[in-house]
Length: 530
Image 1 (cartoon, rainbow, N blue to C red):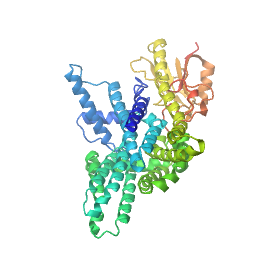
Image 2 (image 1 turned 135 degrees about the horizontal axis):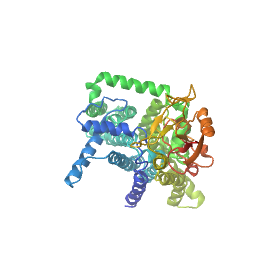
Image 3 (image 1 turned 30 degrees about the vertical axis):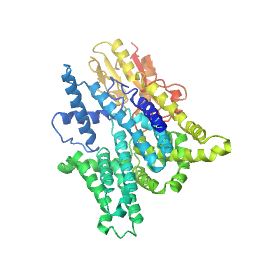
Image 4 (image 1 turned 90 degrees about the horizontal axis):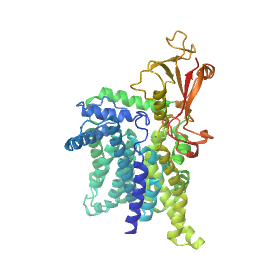
């Protein structure tokens, strides 16, 4: 079929955008913050302690990665290779799993679009998601968000399938209930990947309401049986969550403490106050994450969704509203919090393009296919260029890797070094025989240095100013007592015009790539003038 061939083309292109380059940043260990948390807990599980002792995130991703690491070690042993995985191999395996999960989401979204409307809407939704920069970007990272988005999308797909199979209720058969159980299973797994996926319960509530309204006049269905879809969903949901985050029950004290931290962290903010998520995600995360054209098309798509696909749209929309309410209430506003909304935005954009294309075709003297194809290109092409540009830049060697190589080649053993202290910018100088000094901003002097100055200064600059700030006194010291020996530049021109996630210590923007030379902060290396 033409639709299947088109879907294959979209999936292959989307896979390339997500898989290339999952090796980014290596061997620098902090190119993507928080990957060490995911991988570290997975490795600890492999060590025999199934309790992660950490519930800021649920546990499913740790167990899945532990299984993947164990399988990779077994395969290496079977090939007579050293079964011990290096840190870089752990990272690549974890990132590859996430990239595949992001790619599979395209297929699931196609199925939702086809069920709601037809293959055209399914293909358009998959295309828009394939090139959505936030989904492309996050699919490179060994984190939880993309896997959660996949499972949440699967849960929505099962709910729509169950709603459409609900006609079996009229004949007294409960064949459709299994789809709600499967939806609950996927929803529980999604919530065991990231807590915010619990918003899918709102979608189940909408589906249950629709079933009750649809069959309110049926005499063949008893009242208790009418609630079986919700019962099956919630039972499977709870079972899936507990089975894959079991220590939420077995270590309740730690779970309650960490979960309360999450609630407080969301409310209070993270590295700067940029307002509440209600407006921030609407004005920044969603338009820049999906692509401005896709986001505008999605807003226009609300009308055709509500008019032509009312019941399906109610289920998907209920999940979107519940999720937006949960992430919008706080001041911690990472762009990735809005990631599970991106497939829904792409569905809205797809409905908009299809119906606008049908309206435009006779007026512009075009065939329906040409009209829809032209509009789809106008929406998808800017996002595709943006995502491709992102991948090409991400594949370049990180500034922190280049700076570490230069410094190790030029610094002498036992020399002293000061580097602006931030775990996401400091160089990986393991093995170097350099003595690191600290700087006290209150006394404007180096700690325990007896008035001396370090041999080397390493300072960082970036439009991501929340993670690369240099105290003014350090700038004065560098200008007065040091010579600039090397600059490893990350940006150029009007770099502040690029859109960064200012709460996330990832030194690449979502747009404005003409201002970027390579990943990382700009690094300035100074040597003391003798």
